[in-house]
Length: 322
Length: 282
Image 1 (tube, each protein chain N blue to C red):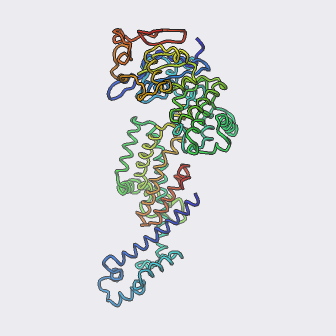
Image 2 (cartoon, rainbow over the protein chains, first blue to last red):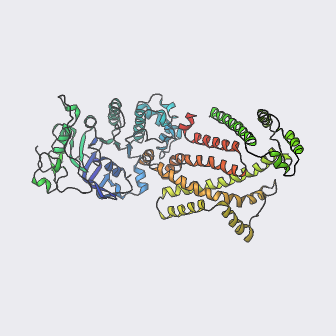
Image 3 (cartoon, rainbow over the protein chains, first blue to last red):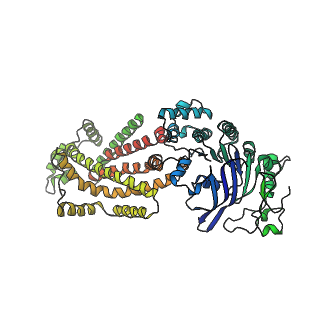
């Protein structure tokens, strides 16, 4: 396989809650190859955000990595000390957050915040500010030099997201994690931001782990896709595999629910019948069996193995039709 | 900012005028006559009449208020009848000492309270956080006169380290400072508790905000996150509390609407300096 920046092996994360242990992620295997874009798609609550908090090691206080490894550039993130982690964050790995309006500190200027993230570099403040302004122009902020003196509330949501993208790329990371960066924006802006990310990724050659619940965005931007359901990575493969030859029944059902593929006029949008199982009381067998149209006896009894369909395309299912 | 200050000062003037009108009407509304209070029960009606004329109480209400405000505008607050000294002199002599005392009390309370609050928030729910919590609630609960009494007994009477009474020889700063320590300690101690609790609470809130998470995701050093990125926001409620608190402390010694308005103006201005969003709304 291609050399990977991030290699997640058999990762399980749980949350301790008063009602019991929530097994938020179970046995996740995922690789992010160098300079490629990997998308993670899934419904709300499927564990996408838990996964990235585990990767960047900024987890909730009640979260616990129960098993597995998170190898970033060869080292397991779990065994790094806080200073070592700080050395990685904002240098080799950076992040773009979901809500751009709250992701910037409201009482410091954009310039100050962009200079501060370069605190490791031994160049003058002026040079740092210049780099910040250059980056702002690159992400499409006009009149960048004078806008360094502005505060976050002087910018619109789309502008703020451009700024956070500029910040994330300013440090020239090997891996950029984008946690639903377009969810808080309207559709037009979403397209602009995705195009921007795509262009910049090509220029900077950084790997991106991109989280979204928007299938079209994933299809547009990513090289590889992982489909998550209720804390498991049920299928992964290249964009073509997932969108043209989906193997897992959940992936198929999810693609059928995408309003943009519906051709006939309908009063009801398609949905997947049933509900997501409780992550405290996990059902036996396959996590998807009670909603799966193809479920058989074996699906209710044993957890499906990870079946390889092609070199990069795998799915967790007993009854794959390939 | 300048416009805002002018606006607030203008408002302060209005408040003072209204307060003066209310005070003057109280003289006329409440039963009893200032002259009989001053002269005592054995005063004759002629004596009262004479005093009324002297104090201008026989003139129409509007004239009384207007003439008083006119004098105030020229810096004349009138004479205190009992001591026969100008009121302004009495107030400002006291005010100097009160202001220094209040500022010293609040000053050391800020210097100790803010770091304590930050410490508690960073090490939340640990044993030392709980100790700070117990200390804070304890000093809030103990009235300052109790602190004053016991610290006087201990430091001034038993150990004889510090003077027990007086404000020190005017001009001799070290002496005045030595006289300041005990009262400032007694007044400020409770404030240490208030500030520590308030800073802890708002710091915890701010540390949970998205932009702090983003700052962490960029690997910023923890001291930079706590003392710069978070503290500048977490301090805002404390500044507001101190603004009203300083006003209350001064007015408890000197009933003074003017000072109260002034101190809230100052606290709002500090808030405005810290928070650009507030600054632009002014």
